[in-house]
Length: 300
Ligand code: HEC
Ligand code: HEC
Picture 1 (cartoon, protein in one colour):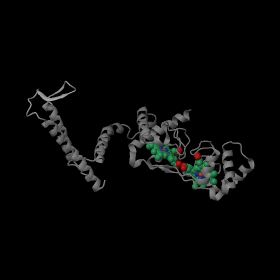
Picture 2 (tube, protein in one colour; picture 1 turned 90 degrees about the vertical axis):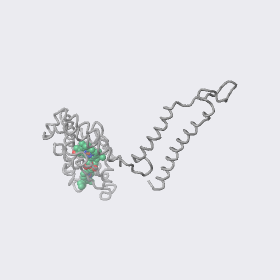
Picture 3 (cartoon, protein in one colour; picture 1 turned 120 degrees about the horizontal axis):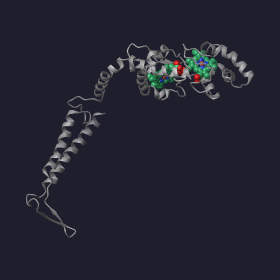
Picture 4 (cartoon, helix red, strand yellow; picture 1 turned 135 degrees about the vertical axis):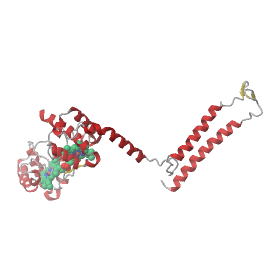
């Protein structure tokens, strides 16, 4: 807020408060000195509508003064007038930090009961999974979906198909340290025809009917350009997060257009690191929830 705007607000607010005081004073002075309370003021409207001298009860008037006094005290204590800080030096950040600290203290005992248990055990503990699910809904669902089923560009965490592996330590690392998949753009390398060929081969890997000649040409190009990351058989590499291209499960969509777009433009999925943001205790619980989904998917 600029200095000018701050003063502008201060002047308007104080002017209004003073205006309120003036209004009370002005409406209270009346002509009660000349007419006794309860007597007629001598004004008549519509033939028989008479005004009596009935001032506001005292307590009512005091309410007005008290609210005005409250406002002035509030202005002094809190940052309520333009840029002024207020005597208490209150800020939203400090209030939030205080609440956070209180919540952390309150929940510490709750989280401690899970300390030192291994992830597989936690995934079988209904209390831990329930707590993990709540954390998941707060911190993960906006990207991975409220059922963890994923969305375009955001992998499903519930299908037992993994970019980076579904072992407890893989899942924990994905969440703690984040991930960054790097699929370079191959449009310029392959050219238009080359792109059609490789895409045909990728679709053939997924059991789709395609032009055989194209797929054959694509297979050579795949071996040359793609096998290094996606492996010669196309089943992917979990160290690089290079997806399996043979199981018809897609992060970015499996339509011919989406597959060609992945190859032509490249992809660059970013999973943010949550270590500093959530802390290891909470990550452990949310990881337990994700692991429990995997276990459920395996059983199906
Ligand atoms: C801002 C969006 C975003 C948020 C928030 C987010 N993720 Fe992710 N996550 C991603 C993306 C994108 C990927 C894929 C990264 C890649 O392509 O390399 C991913 C990958 C993962 C993986 C690896 C999946 C695999 O197949 O190996 C796990 C596990 C995961 N996220 C769990 C979580 C959990 C648990 C949370 C909440 C604490 C979370 N994510 C929050 C976007 C997000
Ligand atoms: C440097 C390693 C690397 C090379 C080389 C590479 N890819 Fe990828 N590819 C990846 C990674 C990593 C991803 C996942 C990107 C992400 O998570 O955002 C990916 C994603 C894809 C996808 C999207 C998959 C999905 O689930 O939606 C397709 C399709 C694909 N690659 C095909 C190819 C083809 C065809 C080639 C060769 C022309 C190729 N890739 C070469 C690493 C590579």
